[in-house]
Length: 277
Image (cartoon, rainbow, N blue to C red):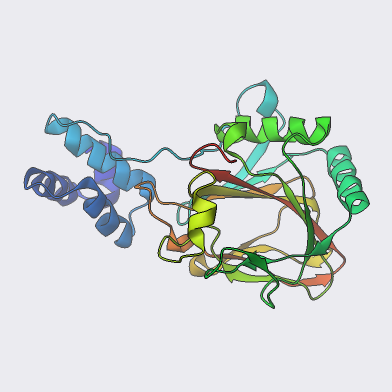
């Protein structure tokens, strides 16, 4: 391993990785064990890749995922305020301007919001549920020039094609409203997931953009990590829903905490493995 990884985890891990790869343990099984033992996903993947290279074997086991990029003209105003390793999450600022936030809010309210739903795991249909008490509206892809421009910016910032993104959804949370802990990935074991997975594969990432932050409450919470993030208006929380070996990430469990004062308006962007149809 590189000196940086050896410094973090010790020389014995280098020998452990090489030994297990030599006896034909899969990179996926090693990755799971290492991450379970407090390795970050990036460090575990790097150590496995180095082990494969030392053995002269190809490193083709990782699944491509969106990653935050804040270089380039389209991303020049976006700022990374912090990163979380487990789950893979990034707190962003200045993803949208105040004017863009207001225009998107006005357009959503003009279209009209209805009670938000959740996926029924048996049927795949959207149904109302006490766990999600907001109101919402979906936009079609590039429904207006502004929506198209925002989708292009999100594609540039995440390095993921616009064609792989679902239509943006705007959600309004009044005082007391919330979205209790849930995952955004579709459970492959549930029959209701099949309909959704056929439309572009698994949800690989989520971006929650704050069009209007509440005066109190209304954060984005990751219960398994013991962390709650509350971006400013125009900021966002980005996180991946899969691990680097392509499996649903249990650590991506998240919630929209109850609004205490004011109104929270967010816009959610889900990205898929393949083209969303």
